[in-house]
Length: 141
Image: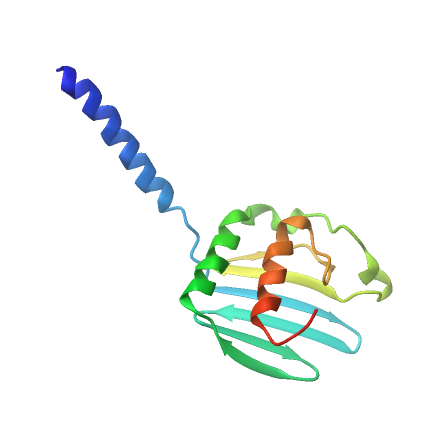
């Protein structure tokens, strides 16, 4: 009986730990789009491939397993339900002083779209994701 009092809580904790690990969000696609009159930047991370496009060039790059794991980690840090309500730190895009940018993150049948922000100056919660996608591409911010 004494051993049962010890074993039951340990088993319960192990089950909870396994359940918590299953909450990792496996995204299907991340799309970053930034545009204004005469300028366009599009970065799409899907599977093991990053596609990038501007008015000057476009291409694709292979994404390593390590890079994909890093992307998943960054997405898991986000509260996807709230990215549409994040406040942009600046509003230069209103006067064409910066590109209008936004993220779309697709997980299963659900798409999470961020609020619009100035490219290069996203809400702090999205900065790591923007920097990461640019680092994978051949495009400079």
